[in-house]
Image 1 (cartoon, rainbow, N blue to C red):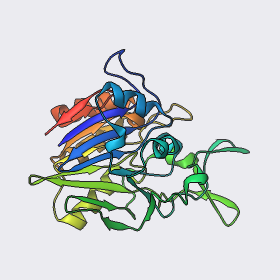
Image 2: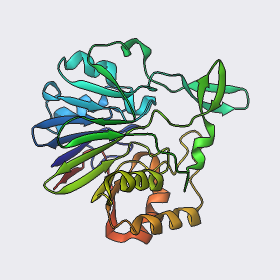
Image 3: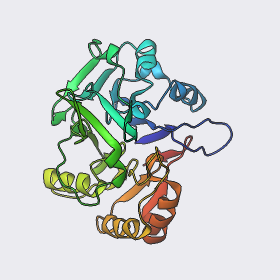
Length: 274
């Protein structure tokens, strides 16, 4: 398996540009896939620098319906006419972030691509191939990110708290190893891993994705003690974690103190092989 970080908030060097978003290129068996597409066309620029041919991509997974993970999708569909793009059936609902008591801004996906022939809307569990699966519908609320409190969904003309039904997670099986990818873990990474355990009977070997410990709107991060307890919970899974994006640098440093070599930072331009 080969994973290249095309978009993350930070960069491994000045050779790359970053943005608030996430996009990962993954090679697994015969698959060439993208997990999320960042906020803009930047994934394409960095893909070229990292030797990734976008025209060869066969699968795209959009982890959830926020602009910083699906903002590059319209550009991608202009570059690639063969890939199937998997988006939750809830992915084109209206999603907002509250800025003030009276103001909320739209943060969802471009509705003009909802009926695109390459887009496939997914259910709670989808088997894509003998090595790729998607699951959603996470219901646990342990270590539920406090940054979720400003995130809203429009339902029947009213703004209600987002339940994150649109968030889906990717499972990759290769050579006896299991990798779990969670874009922002809005449902809480512990709850996502718990659902993985319930579904597959064991913990994943590797977990990749943001942990939503930093509120992008306010810059606030979770309390240090909460982050420490989260790190202790993640250690008990014995998985190797790669994280970045919405985790926050401060929270990552605390997790690193607790988890040591069991957690690593994922920046634009970084490569995972295994």
